[in-house]
Structures are given as C-alpha cells and as structure tokens.
Amino acid sequence: MKLRSSISGLALAVGLGVMVAGCGQVNQVRAQKAFKDANKLYAASDWRAAATKYEEALQLNPENAYSHFFLANSLDNLYRPTRVGEPENDALLTKAIENYRLAGEQIDDPLWKRRSLEFLVSAYGPDKLNDPTMAEPIVKQMIALDPEDPANYFQLAQIYENSGEYELAEETFLKAKQAKPSDPAVYMQLAGYYNRQGEFDKTIDALSQRVAIEPNNPEAHYTVSTYYWDKAYRDFRLKDAEKLDMVMKGLESVDKAIEIKSDYMEAIAYKNLLLRLEANLIKDPRRQQALIREADELRDKAEAMRKAKNTSAS
Image (cartoon, rainbow, N blue to C red):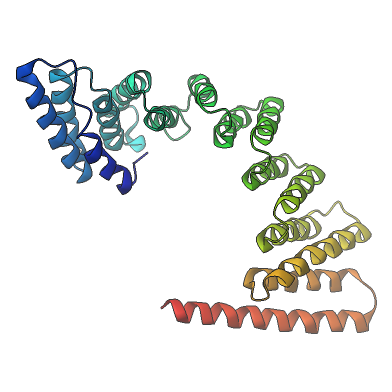
C-alpha cells in the first residue's frame, strides 16, 4: 500500500520538528540530517535508499517514532505480493510490520498514529498476509481511538464478512450507523452489505434512509432506481406482477433524480431501461409501443449527452 504524493510532502515537513530529545549532542545533528535525507529519498520514491537512511536515523536517534513509520512504508513499497514465499521479499513485509507497530505505539499525533495502524491492518489484509485474526484487534484499537469515525467500523465489518461471521458484520455496520447516523456513506455501506447477503428489502430500506438524509441529492434517488431495475431484471423467481411493482418503484425514484437534475445522463439512461422492462411486462400493445418510443427518445438523449461530454473533455 503506497502513500500518496501529498503524504510524501508531509514526510519532508515532519523532519523539521521531530529530532529533539534522546540524542547526544554529537549525534543529534547527524540524526536530523539522516532523517531529512531519507525524507527526500522517500519523496522521490527511492524506497530502498530511503529505508537505509531511515535505519541510519533510528540508530542515531531511536526515539524518532516517525522514522519507524517511514521506514515501514519504504519497506512496504518494496514488498511484492507476487513474490510471496521468497525469503528476502517476505522479510521486507515482516520488518515493515514491526516498524508500523512501533510507530503506532510511539507516535502521539492522532493522525499519524491512525495512519500507522491503517497500514498495519493493510499488511494483514487479503492482498498480503491475509490474516484477519491479526487485523481485527488493530481495527478495534482504531475504533477506540476515534469511536465516531464510521470508516473504522466499515473496516472491522469487512473483516467479519470476509471471515463468514455475518452476524458480527451486520452488528458492526449498525454500530457505524449509531456512531454517525447523519453520514450517507453509512447507509451505502449497509446497503452494499445487505445486497451481498441477498437481503433486498433491507438493502432498499438502507438506501431509503440515505434518501431521507439527503432528499435533494439526485444520486441518492438514482441509486435506489438501479437496485429496483437490477432486482426486476435479474431475479427470475419473481412473478411478472412483482417485477412490474419493482419497475414502477424504480421509475418513481429515477423520475425524482431527473426532476432534481434534468441533465442527469445516467438517470436518463436508466429510465430508458426501466421503461423497456415495463413494456416487456405488460400486455397492452399500444402502451408497449408508447413505452418503447419514450425509451428510444431517452436512449438517444443519453447517447447525445455522452458524446457531447466526451467531445468537451477531449
């Protein structure tokens, strides 16, 4: 997991203020220079050279917790998941984990402490060590540090879901809702979970709660319509009357989205799909033809909007 360029800039800034107590008079200047040089190498994505310099800085000043973090991330960036099993490669991640842990323990700044824990969780994630039993207590620590941040609950819920502990996953998603009930992302995460579990009614309920929070957001209404279309189109267990009910509810939602944003290309395209599905489900030939004509107009309108958008972007 790599840090963004903005954080590389922060590495340079951090170097100005962290070399304080713990060094002897002779070593202090050398330690500060090593850390500053390491930060420059880090910002240039020269991970191996940066790691060497951070290790030098730690030898001169073991109390610089930020050196642990940036050493860990330099090693993390050198690690290649595709080469798992190779001793030299695996040793990079092992050492990165050790230093992320030390950074998390020693750094007082809440932002950097959290960042250390986030990367530590990533090291135990499915793309690397794939060890949820090690990741779980770290995420719980992150929740304890900031119990009002729903993102921490999302991460813990994902660990439970991936491990097949679905009751704990749902419980944790609901705790995210309790932590920040005004955050639309909570309801999108909850809806996504219920959708993956095949619980359509709960999915729609979560999406509807999001709509209630931001009724003037066209994307909130549009999202509801896509779930209704998908259910009506793909669930072959439904009777035609049930499918038609889904389509009508989808049309109600997509119309609201277009009412709020008349040039909402995606919503216009989806209304086209919903109208075609409605035409397939009804028996009146005249009504069918009218629906198809309207759908064709919407399809052409959406296509024209897409082409205009691409032209303006080029």
